[in-house]
Image (cartoon, rainbow, N blue to C red):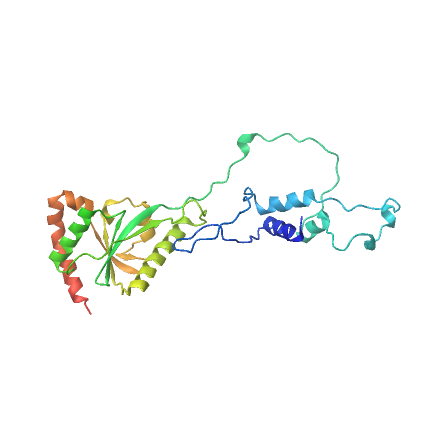
Length: 275
């Protein structure tokens, strides 16, 4: 093997990863066609390093010299023995002992390592006047969009047509990366998505209208990600108004009538906070 291949193997065995672009990111230019080496099977860095040490051949000793007559100059300066590498790692060289067959441990005693699974959710966003962000879980259907526009126009919050709906799904590449902190990574992803949209569109967000917050379980992924406490989302750093799900409102006239006083109060807050 070439020195570069050996260097990469030792770096990989010590847990130092040499990164290379292997996946096409969203909105990125297409990568030129090329052949990639098959990725090796996942193995802990310590075990990979020990495997390299165990496979390393011992330094040959000339037959004309006895062990007592060997000098440091007889060993090539560029070669490193497994014992020397173990010394650098702070490990003692294994003592030579007669080989004794140890009883094999039962397979049931080996506990597999559980990998963290990413949170999976999606949401739709509509920005009202560049100030208030209306969000709901999942994708807004045409009837739900029409109902939302009608309610906001009736309350005086919206003038004209409903702005374009922006759709967001997490995780963006579910089969590529294994999350280390699924909840924190999902919160960072939502915050970055909202901040990026606000920067591109010139929004000055003041408030969040969360439709359907009262109809989801407390352990739902979006509830954990929004992290609402005392009517404020700590993920987005914005106050949150929580209303019923739009799908429920499309099917229930009683739910619409019960919501109307809250919409009136919401419209008063909209006008009082207008610049």
